[in-house]
Structure formats: structure tokens, C-alpha cells
Image (cartoon, rainbow, N blue to C red):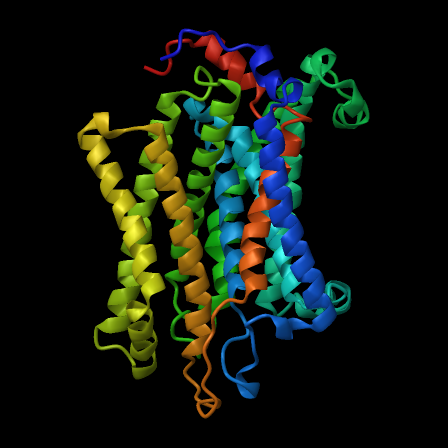
Length: 441
């Protein structure tokens, strides 16, 4: 445990210091995002034909692929991130307070990436207006796709409000030390602020956290998102009530992995070992193990239902999934991470922050692969056989692969920019650590 005392200067360091590594990382992330944008512009010019996606009746294959799989992945990361932050406030998990804002920012970034995928996959951005907004009063009554857009938009607004309320406290007290060139942003964040509102804001944040905890399993990654698939009985790979809990475990494992990576990066870059402590990494790793166990257990439920005397169509779909190398790799990655975390609990000396980072990368890779395969296999093996004479295959195009790398670059750029504007660790967390210096034990 570090003997340094956390201070306001610590959380101001990202805004006041810019290293060569910062510029290098920004350049790499910016290049990845730029390449994706170039690919998207090419897609807009030539049409969706430049992807590996195709219509069943014109050449086989699938109409949804990496775009929708990565969309689900980013939405899961976003929803899991805000659930983690809400749990910190609602359940009094003060030990994780230093990473709560990172989780909130991860939600904003993840929802932005997911929303970008909706626009990209529409083929023409104007369809957001002509097909969704223009006919919203009709489609909202019967389209799970529109429900999806609705709850994601609502969640973005809810999370942004949640984040802005907590930022007002920090900005108002640190204003003299914040960069002057961002003055208009700080003025906007603190418009009408007075210290009398602090107690009211704390109550509002608590109620928002409660709303988030309730919404997540009922409407978000445990509800509307899996309903897009679970309500379709002609797609045996998708259909079933288990999709809600399964999606929720994927969201939580992915989000915790993302927070581990972000925490490690900021800790190493700004010497925050006394703020984002080893104890936080141990706790996050244990939670990652718990939700990874649930993830594998729910996968087992689906495999059992799909292989033990199943209907013909379901058995065919699951046989194809279980034989697929991507499914084997993704499940193996989760199992290896779970085995490591279990061994770590028995023998604590096995814990290392870098191993926690490797575990996080492995889980993020596994959940991304699993979601892409989930989407593709569901479309490849429907119950109806109307296009049986035009079988096809699907392998992601370079543009689709670039979209994943590009959105990761976009999220990295988001954190690099935000870290220059506002504190990514709450002032409340610093105050709490000073008041409870021995809490890590």
C-alpha cells in the first residue's frame, strides 16, 4: 500500500501534463478512427455491397454481421459501466469510488460507439430521419428495433445527467486550477451552482443510480436489447428467455474488463498507485470472475437445451455453433480467465495487475467474438428454408474489421480528450481516501 496521501494535485495532473506517449497514443487511435471513417465514406459512395453482408435471396450469407455484433458489444460495455458506477453509490461500495467516474465515462463512450454503428449499418444516414424519426409514432408500437433506439437514447441522456451532476461539485472547487482555455465549458457545467445544492444533488444522484440499477435488467441489456433476438421463434439460435440474463452477464464482464484496462492505464500514466490501489484491482478481478462464471453457466443452459433431444432446427443451429472455431476460442478464453481468478483466490500471490489486464483483454475479445458469432449463426440457420437453394457464407470484410478497430480508437480518443478537460477521478474519492487512509486493508 502506498504511503502517499491523495491530493487535488493528483487528479489535476492529466490536465496539466502531456507526455510524448500521450501524443503517440492519440496519433495511433486517431489513425485507427480515420481509417474507419475513410472506409465508411467508401461504403456510403459504393453502397453496402462493399461489406461481406448480403441478402439471403441474392447470394446467400447474412444481412447482419460484425456491425450488429459490435453494436451489442459496445452497448453491453456501456450498460455494464454505468451499473458499476451506480452500484458504488447505491450500495456504498466506497472502495471503488476512484474508478466510478471512469465507468461513467466508459458508458458515454460505449453508447456513442454503439450509436455510430446504428448509423453505419443503416447504409444511408438519412434513414435515421426518414425511417425512424419520421415514422416513430407508428413504429414505437410494434418494433423492437425502435424500442432499442429509444432506450439507448434515454440511457445516454440519463447517464449524461448523472455525470454532469457529479462534475459540478468538482469543477466548482477546482476551478482556479483548471485550464483557462476551457473556461466556457466550466461555466456551462456550473451555471447556477451554489454549495447549497450539494446535498440535493447527492440525493438526486442516489435516485438516478437506483433508476439505472432497475432499468438495466428490465429495459436495457437484460431487456430490450435481447428482445431483438429472443422474440423471434423462427431463429432457433436466438429464441428463448435466457437471452436477457446472458446479455446482462456479457455486459458486466465486458464493462469490468474495460474499467480494469482504463484504471491500469491512468494509474501507470499519472502515478496513481495511491488512488487506484491494488485492492481495487483485486476486487474488480474477483467481480470479473463471478460474472464470468455466470456467463459460462448461462452458456451451458443454452448448450444443454440445444443438444439434449432438441427440435431439429435448434439442434442443427447449435451443432454448427459448437463446431465453430470462434465459439471454441471465446469459451476457452473465458474459462482460462475464470480458472486464473479461482487460482488467485486460493493463492493470492498469483495476483498481478498485468495479469488482471490480460484477463480483461481476454474477456473483451471473447465477448466480442461470441456476440458476432451469435448474430451470424442465428441468421445462417433459421427454421424456414426458403433460401435453401442459395446457401452462402459470411466472413467479415476489411471495412467491417476496420470498424471495430476504429471505434476502439474513437473511445481511446474520447478518454484522452476528456482527461484534458475534467477530472476523471472524483474529488469525493480523494476526500474519502484522505478521511479513511487505511481503508484498503
